[in-house]
Structure formats: C-alpha cells, structure tokens
Image (cartoon, rainbow, N blue to C red; front, side, top):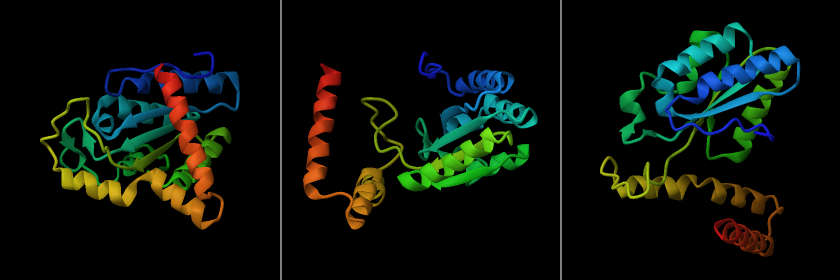
Length: 197
C-alpha cells in the first residue's frame, strides 16, 4: 500500500469500485497521480465495469482502465460471451476514449498507456485500454483445458510471444547482443531463485 498498490481482489470486477475511490481521492487532492485498474475480458461483462466507467466519465476521474483481453474468461471464449469484437468500443457508450492495442507489443502498449496517462493528468478523464493478448496457460494450475486445443496455444506462442518479439526488435536495432541476452537470462534466473527461496 505504501508504494501505491491498493491490493488484489479475488472477486471478478472487484477492483472497479476501489479504483473509483482512488481516482476521486486523486482529483480531490489535486495530485498528478493516475489510478490504474487491471482486469480481464470476462470482467468487462460485469456490472461494476459499466458502473465504474460511467462514474469515472461523468466525474472526469484520472483513471486508466486496462483490459487484458486474453481470449478466455476462465473457460469461456470471449467471442462467445462478449457482444463486441473490441472491448475498447464499449468506451463509446460513456463518451471516453477506448483504445485497442496489440498486447504482445511492448512499445505499442507503452505508447497507448502513456497517451492515456497524459490525458488523465490534463484533467480530461479516463481511458479504456484493451490489450489484446492470449492466455498461454490454463486458468488455474492443473486446468485440463478441454475448452481449447494445444494447436491453438502453440500457434499463438510461435507468433506472438512478447518477449521473443521484443528481443528480435532490440537485436534488429543492434541494442541487444547475444552476450547481453544471455547475461539478462542468467540474472532473471537468479532473481527467480532468490524470490522462491
């Protein structure tokens, strides 16, 4: 909490009322902070999502709503449970910007988020940012994943792994060398081992 993380919530769409309170607090205190709410595509079908977008819009709260659209809400395909192709279009109903970004492109997501944060800091209100990505693992450990085939997972992994895509871009721009990439991988493994220990 001391560094601005308002906690996790196991309830689907449970973060929306919290972020409204945080956004209102920021506005009343007149700071340059921006509240951010992360949620999945499934949460965009819940009532608190719509209530929060409406309230944030009418009060012009400095909030960035970030939807991680990973194609599945638990075991249900988003295309089955969602009335729109792009969740970002739901922002139109509240008169706020809605942006769909390639959630596997680090720089595209960064650019879209930066523009939304700048907008919020100017006092222009919230933005809905949809990052289109894919959930490569099951919804929970041991998930048998009977709702999709492994071919689908492999196809996404081969084309869209954000780490591999960003590494390739950095190598192309001659920023990342093989030696530096190995060094980073060793450091990450050490950090993970330390965290587990």
